[in-house]
Amino acid sequence: MPELTESVARLIDEFAKLPGIGKKSAERLTYHVLRVPACEALALAEAIRNVKENVRYCRVCYNLAEEDECALCRDPKRQPDLLCVVEQARDLMALEQTGVYHGLYHVLLGRIAPLEGIGPDRLTIDALAERVRRGSFKEVIMATNPTVEGDGTALYISNLLSELPIRITRLARGITPGSVLEYANKEILTDALSGRQEF
Ligand SMILES: [Zn+2]
Image 1 (cartoon, rainbow, N blue to C red):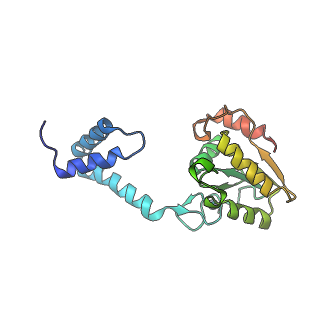
Image 2: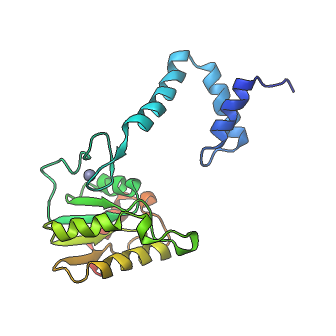
């Protein structure tokens, strides 16, 4: 087998660090990059640079944003008294794709996972509590994943907010326990939203 050049070996190593990409796929992607026109390959590099330089967390809800506040928080058509709490921005995307939810969001940036040493202080729970205390929300929907950790996180937050005069609900169990929101299909998520129950 011929020796790889240093640059080629480096690109293979970088691709192999991506989730779900093994050595073979990393090699295939590298040879693809070598084969396509420079402008096409550099567009990928530029897109990665752009995301890292321009994307940040919304200062209100911690969704991904390219300004201080995300597009959802700035949208006057969103229902201002309804708040949906999710673990990750990709869960928010999954719920948005159903098209049936018109309230606001709060992204936790994870879930409480004692076994991994992730406590409530590592998430955006303080900001959430502050936002709910200050805001005019009538209902907070817990839309963490139906896993042991997602349920534990939802329970922790509902206890934290329990003294406030708001309704706290949980997505209905249309979603199979253990499954992850981002992989649930649109119909299941729509049912889970419309059938939400008191916590
Ligand atoms: Zn936002």
